[in-house]
Image 1 (spheres, one colour):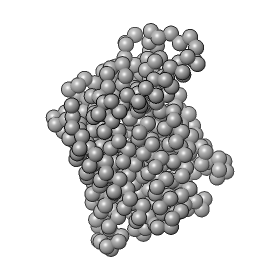
Image 2 (cartoon, one colour):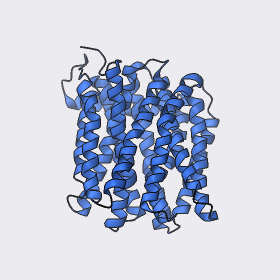
Image 3 (tube, rainbow, N blue to C red):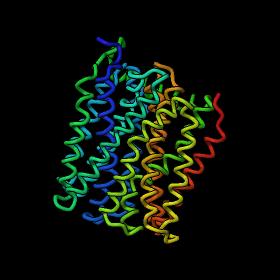
Image 4 (tube, rainbow, N blue to C red):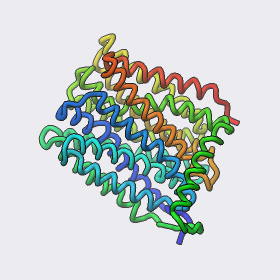
Length: 406
């Protein structure tokens, strides 16, 4: 059996790319569109309810991320963990809205936690399929094609939100996710390494110890430490901005739900070819330069989104915001994965991605929490929240500018 869990064949690469469609469908369709609208429109929730639910989820992911990544490295397995976390997340998604309000929030949180843990194992599989010369291209292909999943989410919303309702959409999107992740599960090799697992407790203790050492050692590798610090700031703003975009458009900008979904669709459409373009630029000019360009762009996008309602600027500019969001979201993801791979050794890929995800999850705790706290608890409104997010992106960009590659 192949040493790799996913081959470098066209089938292996294609199945890895298609999985990203299911992952993006969840992010755009469940987290970014249907759940926040269902929560605020049908269940009388608000920005705080949604933001605090996401923050609690990310606290748990923050704790579990380094453990999950290190267990993957210790056991030399990714596919079994990816299979388990993804399938349980899909099942939880399908049950949202079936039970009462509180149970549905718990199911949503569980799905978010498991999808983010699955991403640790999914991202680590990139090393199985790529070489140093094509990692940007394949990563970009995954991001670009993955956007089709977001288009599916928007199309489902436009077709069925008004007629069938959000609870039907939870089930439909869960089914689509299952169909999209299935090729990867069928084509992957569930390879067990030479490490014998004699006792689960010993593996967990080793994982916890290694996770602590990984975080502690990060401070000694200056470029890696600076990147992680910058990522905390810029990802906090981008994640919160993306998950609250629909609510911001509907409640502050006074766009209709259909208009918001159409703008979202346009951004996604532009993001599809952008993934391949950014992949080419990463391979040619390096991931770090492209990362700085994309973070700076997000500072401008969020700043523009904050100014549009305040200055009563033309509504057509929202289409520009949508297009730029799609283009530079693709660029961010395409730039980050190769950079993490360049920092890690072959036998510590999962560990590095776990720390990378851990910092991202810490940012995903503070971003939605800050939005909900500023907008709802302090009562300053959504414009104040998005202004804070723009400042966070600027801080992240300045940290990257001050970081010199060794």
